[in-house]
Image (cartoon, rainbow over all chains, first blue to last red):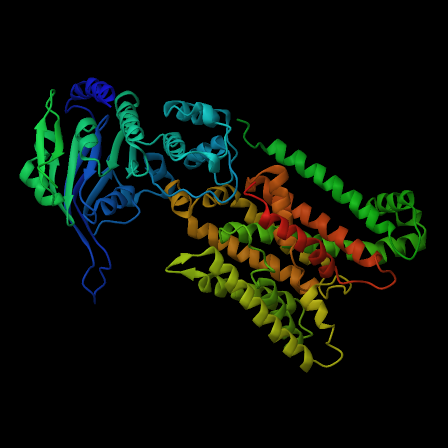
Amino acid sequence: MSASAENSAAVAPQTAAFGQDAPVRLNVEQASYAYAATGRSAPNFTLGPATFEARQRELVAILGPNASGKSTLLKLLAGIVKPLSGRIEVDGAEVGTLDLRTRAQKIALVQQESEVLFPLRVWEYVLHGRYPYGRRLRFESDEDCLLAGNALAQVGAAELRDRWMDQLSGGEKQRVILARALAQQPSLLLLDEPTQHLDIGGKVELLRRLRRLADESRYTVLVVTHELNLAAEFSDRIVLLHKGKCLRVGAPAEVYDRDLLEEVFEAPLEIEVREGGRPRVILRGNL
Amino acid sequence: MRPLTPKRVFWICSVLVGVLFVMVVVSLRMGAYPISVRDIVMTLFNGALGRRDRIPSDFWLVVFGLRLPRIALGILVGAALATSGAGFQALLRNPLADPYVLGVASGAALGAMLSLMFAPQVPGAIQAAAFVGAAATTGAVYFLGRRGGQLDSATLLLAGIISASFLSAAIMFLGTTLSGRDQRGMAFWIMGDLSSPPSLNLHWLYLVLIVAVGSIYTTSSDLNLILTGEQEARHLGVNVSRVKLVVYIAASLLTGLAVSVAGAIGYVGLIVPHVMRMIFGTDYRLLIPASAIGGAIAIVFADTLARTVVAPTELPVGAMTALAGAPVFIYLMRRSVR
C-alpha cells in the first residue's frame, strides 16, 4: 500500500501544473432537481442548486454520505433527468438540448450494473461504444476496431479481448466497461461508484488509471465515490453533498475541514495534511 | 477481433438459403405421387423461367398446384415465427421469450377465431384480428410481467403461461359454439396446421412478412445494445422507446400473420433463434435474417415429417415442432450459459 501511495503522490503534484487556462468542459450553474415534484405531493427528495465547473484534464470527485444526492447529481450531468432549474453545459452546449447520439459522443457514463443476457466477447462489448458515431444500422469500420483496441489497451485490458463477458472477474469487468466508455471518445467521463465492488488494491489502481486518463488523454473525469482518502489523493476538485445540498466545492484541502466532514459523515474524524498539501482522513479515538 | 461485415451476413444467409432450397426439394419429393428429384428440379427451373409448356401437366399439378403452395406457406410461417421470437427475446430481454410461450400466439388465435365468427367474408380480417389479438396480449403480458416497475423474467414467463392457458380456454369455449362449417378443428388453432390454404393471396402475406422483418432488421444494431441493458443503451445514444415500439408492432404483426394462416405453432420462435445464436453468435444484424431463414427451414422440415411419418394420416405441424422443440427447450434450460 505504501508503495502505491508514494506512486500516487508522485502523480498528484503534476496535475497542479494544469492551470486555470484549460478549457471548461462542464459548467453547472444553479442546477437543481426534485423527485416526485408533482403539483399535489411534496417532493420526496430535492437536490438544491449546485454550481461548479470542471476543466479539461481535471478529475472531480463527488462526495457525500448515502442519500446525499450524489447519484441524482450524476443523472443530471448525464442528461438522464432534466434539471428543475439552472443550466448544465458540456462543451458549451446545454445537455438537455442535445440529441441522444450527440450526447453519447460527449458524455460517457460508467455504471455498476451491466448484465449481459447472451454470451458476448469483450471486444464486441467495447465496440458498442462506437455506436453513437454511426448510422442506425451500422457495421463497424476498421477505425472503430482500432479505437476499441486502443480503449482496451488504455485500461490495461488488451489481453482480455477475446474473453467472454460473463467469465470476467469484478475488476476485469470494470475495466472493460470503462474501455467501452473510452471508445465513445467523450469529453466527459462520469463514473457512478466505480470502486464499490473492488478490493483496496483495485480501488487504488482504478483511481490511478482515471488520473492518468485525465492527465494524458485529456478527459474530464467525474467520479461519485465514498472513498474520502482516494478522492483527496487523486482529485483536483471535490464536490461535497449533504442531504441534497451542495455544501462546498473546491480543492481537497479546502473542502476537507474537520468540523464540516464530521457533521456530514456523522463520525469522529481527524484530518492530517500530507506532504504536497493533500489531506488524509482518519478515524479519531476509540470507536 | 473480427467484427461482423455485410459480406459475412450475405454469405451465411446464402448458405442458409441453399439449405432451405434442398429442404424444399426434399419436401416436394415426399408424398403419395412419386416424382424424382431431377424432375422436381427441372419443373422448378422451367416454372421459374415461365416455360410452363415444357412441364408435364401432372408434374405441374403436383409441384405448383399441391405441394409448393403448402411449402411456401410453411416458409412464410416459419420465417415469421422465428423472427418474432428473436424480436420478443430482445424486446422483453428474456432468452426464453417466444410468441407461443408468452401467450401472444394464443391471443392472435383468439382474434382470428373471433373474426371468423363475426366477419368471415371480409378479406384480410383474420390477419388484422390476429394482429390485434397478438398486440393486445403482448401489451397485457408486458404489464403483468412487471414487478416494482421493472420487467421481471420469471414473472413475465408466468404471466405469459397464464395468459396462454386462459386464451386457449376461451378458444375452446368459442370452438364448441361454432357451427360445423367454421369448425376447422380446434387443433388447428391450438396445435397449428398448414393444410388449409389461406383466404388471402400469398403475395400480400409475403409483403407483410418482408416489411415486418425489414423493420425489425433496421433496429438490429440498437437491439444488440439493448440486450446489454436498456439504461446503458440509452446512454450510448439508442432511442430505446422508439426501438421497442417498432419491435413490439413488428413482432406482433409477424405472430398475427403466422397464426392467421397456420394456427399457433409452438417452439419455432424459441428454438430457431437459439440454435442460430449457438452457431453464428448473438449479433442481431446476423441473427434476424439467419433466424428468418432458419425458421423457414425448420417449418418445412417439420411439415414434411408431419405429412409423411404416419402417412396417409397427417399430423398437425405444431405437434411435430412441439415433439422436437420441447426436448430442445429442456436441453437449453439445463445447459450452462454457453
